[in-house]
Image (cartoon, rainbow, N blue to C red; front, side, top):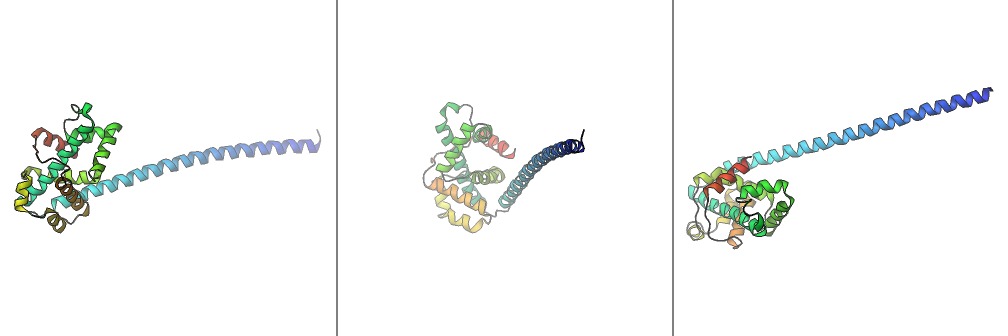
Length: 214
């Protein structure tokens, strides 16, 4: 075998070894890219979780810090409970076939997480009333904290005590998200989007509280 032939064979073998190494490196880089992407997703999810937790903590702090008289709390509570009942009623109007399986607002809040159809209807109900998920969270937080001490006042009684509840909210509620949610609740009720006759079933209130806490 000539020197040239031997050299050519050696060169080919060397090129094969280099090619194998390059393929191995490519595989390693692909694995590394996958690991980086996976870690990035986990990091983003963790950041989102921390941000949501911080927002929830801030909302609870804001609700607990409210300084209203018992009468003012009851008036605000009346708007809040009427809006929450209205949202539940509105969902049932759009999903009559699910009325028996969605007896409370709590059941709607739970079901929408896994049921796309319920979730879509829930979103449409919020949009029609000019509300967002954050508004509902704020209203439910207010409901949990102050609902046990407040009374429900009818629209006529509310007008007797406070002529401009929106001004009261604007002046007294410092947290923007909570203030906006309460103002929207007043707007929904004052515009007549929700009915004027409400009851407060004990089971529904208990279910709502358990759902929001969990």
